[in-house]
Image (tube, rainbow, N blue to C red; front, side, top):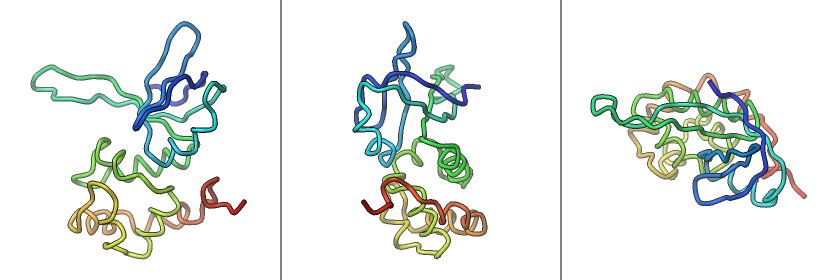
Amino acid sequence: MITNISGTLTQLVEDRATLQVGPLAYEVLIPEFVRRQLQASMGQEISLHTIFYLDGNPTQGRLSPRLVGFLNQVEREFFELFCSVDGVGAKKALRAMVRPVKDVATLIENQDVKGLSGLPGVGPATGERIIAKLRRKMPKFALLVTAESTPA
């Protein structure tokens, strides 16, 4: 399992970052809120907390290894919880995470189905399932202070 990767940020596109680690370059999938925070770090050494998973259809024998990266361990932990909801996998969670963890956790804690439904790929039924499964686990995430939510 790969839980952390450090290297030079060489490329940043919509949903992925490329890190140069010695002679190897690693593609790491990232949610939108992480991409926004990394924009000022091009060419710099960064570290990402990662989740490793296999993507694809095992019955067809087509599995691709994937890394998903976050700026800290708490974001990584939130993503794992978010993916544990029925009907929400890594791909859907990556698309949905356009807002910082604190904001999404607050929507869940406040049982805001409409707010959750505003996230890409999350409809009302999925929003209700997310709230039902995660509501009691959100206080620690809703209290996060992030670079994006800190006034300048």
